[in-house]
Length: 285
Image (cartoon, rainbow, N blue to C red; front, side, top):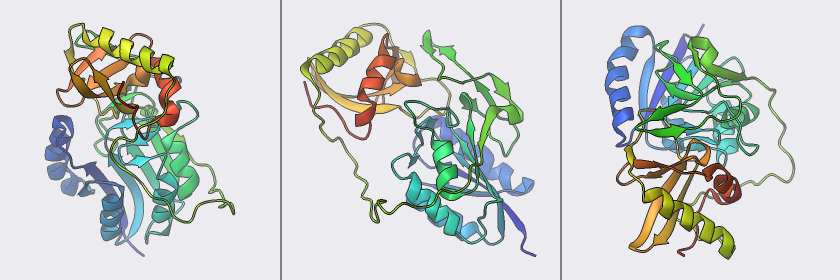
């Protein structure tokens, strides 16, 4: 009989919070029955998981930034390809369990839920966090909160979020694998960078005014949670073009360069209006 394998994978990037996670878990994992890997994107993660699949894969925990539509590079846009690749991996089966260990990955926004979507494509149970997450499932240190305030900035809750510890942190999905439909694409091409999209002048003006009003107030440091941006966009202000991110369902504005954040009143409605364009950016105003 093949040995059971438990794998914890942590994104390798320059984020200080994830760096601390890697430094701690790399020493902890081998002494506690877990294989430890690092990865840079979804393709690299699949390759490294395949290298570790020397037995029956019992659990995989993917530690990354999250939101309802992504766990960093495992996102709604590539989840079918990622899930199908997992399903074909030696050692992976319907009995395997995947933990998407990033903030809010078990919740839904605008119809999207990355944990539910990965269940549907991989055929295995997938657990997503029911709030802003700290700790890991592997270490049994997981804890989530529905909302919080950090540096005077309120990070609002997504629908269904809770305060919880341990197993109650996770929303578990276990729907049967959906059959592929004839109109599914055989090839998918992912793009990077900022793609201009056409927004109405009123929509552009509202976003620009909201950003300028928010950034006129004092900023705060980013919160110590694994939060993926809901949307990243570029916009031209009076001093040139800037990159910003929307977090916490649009209620927090973040500068990814300085890592400073501002409260964004009315940001949830702005995010909902921009959600169809979340893989690109608005044109310079």
